[in-house]
Length: 295
Image 1 (cartoon, rainbow, N blue to C red):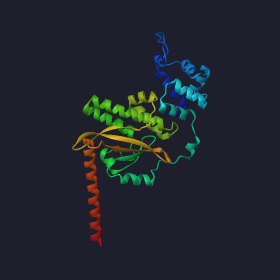
Image 2 (image 1 turned 180 degrees about the horizontal axis):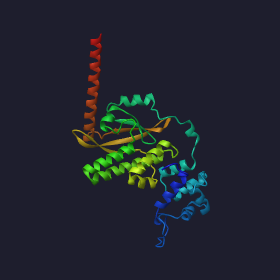
Image 3 (image 1 turned 180 degrees about the vertical axis):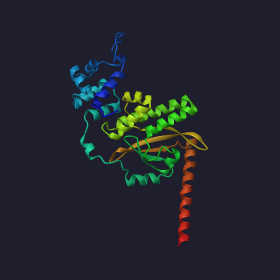
Image 4 (image 1 turned 90 degrees about the vertical axis):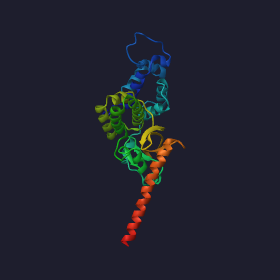
């Protein structure tokens, strides 16, 4: 990605090219040679001059008015997530970067994670780096939900491995997950963040599909969905994941895994958490015995 001269212009250009004339009620034109809408067509839909729209898209006007931004979101048929992202890149708050601290998970959140012995849970930042995870989360996704791992890079590594072993069906399944992660990375990420640039640059050099999807400029936060995991001896089961923002930590997100009550997934998660709790209890007894012997 590199340092972006105009995230606003890049987003407008990408979304303009993805729209079809018929999407906005324009007649089909066999002589049309450019993909998507023309600049003047977007300008007309937003009720601004073509010259002004060109300045915005070229990065020569980086702070259009709120009314103009709202009109552009409507002209490009953006959903709520897309409109929120457009407002953020159109009217950035640079002073926030000056006071931003390193991603440190608070003690209270860490205690919460440790207290959830039957609920896998972990914390990520805006770049999808895992910052903290409880023991059950590390058992559910060994080697992935580990502090220091980037979820998007791990997903690509997993895609490469599972496609070789299981074929195209798994590839399609993981591409959906990757699309979710890429949408969240762009939605939450700061274009001027060196870590974001590092992640995007590395993935761009390694994966053609990442370059293709990233160029589409889809934006969407992680909210909820299903994630298939393998828990032996149950095999593959689906867990429901839910992601929430952490108050007073605007660039940190808490994700939990749950299972439908009475399902095979619930049985698998209960068995896994039961083994963990047994280990914890035995460990406590061992420590107590050791203390008694020492006394």
